[in-house]
Length: 145
Image (cartoon, rainbow, N blue to C red; front, side, top):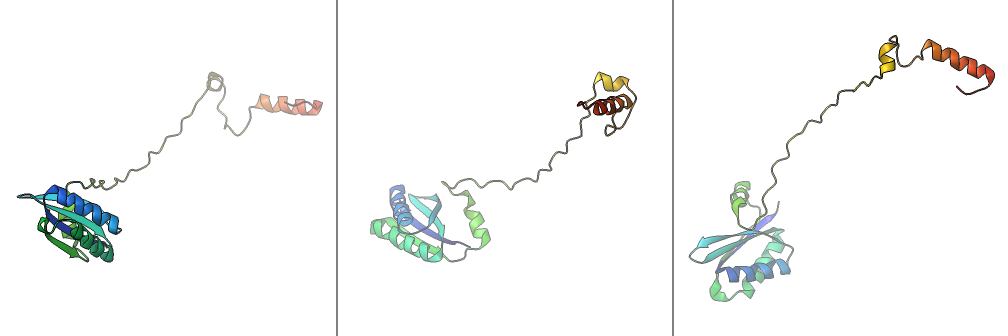
C-alpha cells in the first residue's frame, strides 16, 4: 500500500512551488489539492514512505518559511482516509468498475438457394444422387468432375 503525504501552504503559488519541488526530488505522485479556505491550500502526494519523506522535506525547503502551515506523512493510510480524499481537485476521475458484459451468442444463419428449396431434402454431407453418378462417370473417363 502506498503512503500519503500532505503539505499545507498559504496561497496557491506556494503550493505549486512545493509540489513541483517534491515531485522532482522523489518518485511521488501528486494526487490532488484542496483549497481549505482563508487562502490555505493542501497538496496531497502518494508513493513509497521514503520517497514521501524526501518529497515533503524538499517541498517545505523551497517554500518561504512563513508560507508553510504544516505537513503530514501517513505510512499506511486507512482505506476510508484514501476514499475521503477522492474528491480532491486535480485528481483524475476514477474509472467506474468494469461491467461484466456477456458475449452475444450468434445464432447460426442458414442460407438456402432456390435450387435447394425445390429439390428433395438431403443431408448436406451427402451429394445428390445425380451428382454422384456424374462424378463416377467422369472419373471412369479420366476427367475431373
